[in-house]
Image (tube, rainbow over all chains, first blue to last red; front, side, top):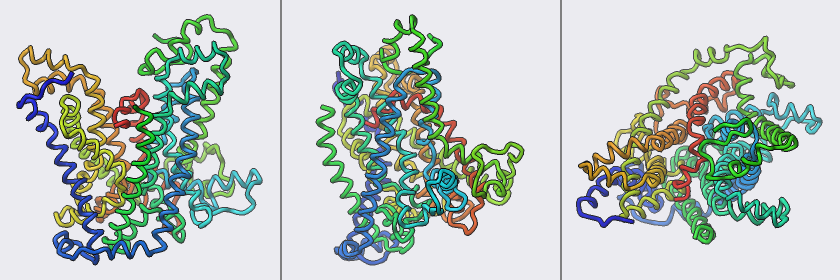
Length: 297
Length: 306
């Protein structure tokens, strides 16, 4: 029951909201407006007033759309997003199913399992840089001892393996998010449903297919959307390990925007790439929303 | 009530699996018990594999380069060579303490600011339906879509204009920007679980709405505030792109920028880098273990689900 809004209450409601609205206006809406302005005003300018004085035009967009680097970055972003989403989702789902079972010390093991989520991206990067080092990395050493490798692979340095090399730490950091979400959803499925299914003689797969999956599908798909958005804009793990290299092999859109702005100092084209990136994310969200709305209503 | 077998988290599902299985558990057969230990073994093995990178970071930080830089690094550290030399060395040669201090100042500052703003706004959104609901939802969605490496571009321009480049205030502001929308939804979700009768009772006792918030609601919201604060602190401590761009003076570097500065050196001192990594990770591990029960109980699900 919502109480009717008396004037005093209405004032209080907005008063409490004021700091948040101010923060959003100043630190999200205004920067976004600046990005759009920058993307449409060709030429170099650092001061906002100077920038706004320039004539509007589409030169920035023309320029980036004719750059092969942009299309390569689109491809890399797609591979990076899908390539981390699928394994992270599968791992998160399997771990959630495992940790939904009853066994000793579950509470502690669960905490430990979810730990990678809290490790800063840069720390994740340096750890995997070391583990995947060509000469002294433990991964190559183990693969050599197992007879799988005969030569050293410079995972992060070789253009053919660099994308795989940045995907591994990304999956490692993102699977706990799926495990947490799916575990919470699993806990909300009433046990009686499983008992009924067992009485009806359902096999383990049928129980998963007809009881578990319908119970977790909504939250799992939402988690997939949020995680895809996160990987699509991910910067820390790639930049701290390869900076988008070697030879642009791991240059996603997020990296390209940054290098354009702070290595080439072309803010206008950087903003134009950023606008394209936001547009892509918005289309993706709009399409996903149609699926998600069916799940949650 | 505790029983020998599986310890269900105190916050877990309402009448979920374990609870329903309880009567059966008492007259449990030996095969059931074996099964539980098999699941335990599988879970423990999974955790061991998943945490190997953290283990390897710690092991490397405890060994000298002569052992670490080997074609066949020992998977178990030779105990006679374990030492804290790498820690001592990296603290001597690099301003790790300064980086940690900067990270702590930025994380504490932005967490406090975001938490105050988010608690007030979350309370308002939870209690009164206004048009701000839509604004808040849109802001949350936007921050989920806005790449940090993009929004840092206008931040750079804005803070240059405002002469805030090379200040910790710039980093606090940038972290507040991404923290407030999420934290607001998280707090709203928490306030939603507190019944409205609390304020009505307080009003009968003569409290103004603000007094009711301060003396009745906020004390009850402490677990939610704690979870929210820990979440914000973890995000701010991990933050990299703002710190790398908005400050240039080395004495203002945060720990993530400091760690990244090792990468690309001709000869990376791996034990030293891993030692610095361990030091930067330790506070996050503590915070995470405090936060984790809230995560699974779904306190944040309201925020996640918008």
